[in-house]
Length: 165
Image (cartoon, rainbow, N blue to C red):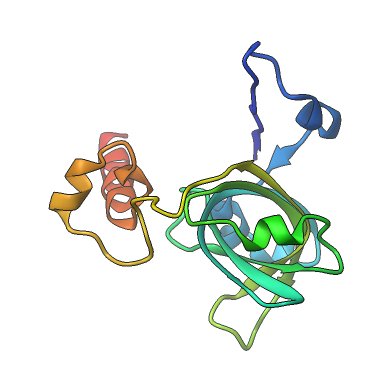
């Protein structure tokens, strides 16, 4: 677990996070110790990789860069106060989600998070260059500041890190 370091211009922790004294749990930690987190309330921060919604509920796919797998977050209009804002999020938006981890034995993923609160740290535009589709290395060279968010480069950096240490 890492301390959340959301900072404003004055280099002080923002009031919202100071009050909450927020501890973020990594997606890697959730997958490695899924039994100990089942039915527990956790907070995860990361980037939106996908967003599907209907009238009363929706699904966010969140990745924090610590693991290949993503976290599926279910948000409900009856629980989430900012449902309309969350439903309009684009890929690449930064979010902090607090909710309960629930086992899903009959689904593709072993668990999901039932969101109680979704805080938008930063939005992204509809023309955000990294979309769900695969991108060529040539294209990724043109957006070098974002290529670390792709699965390919995350894998390369993990192997490089293991070899170095």
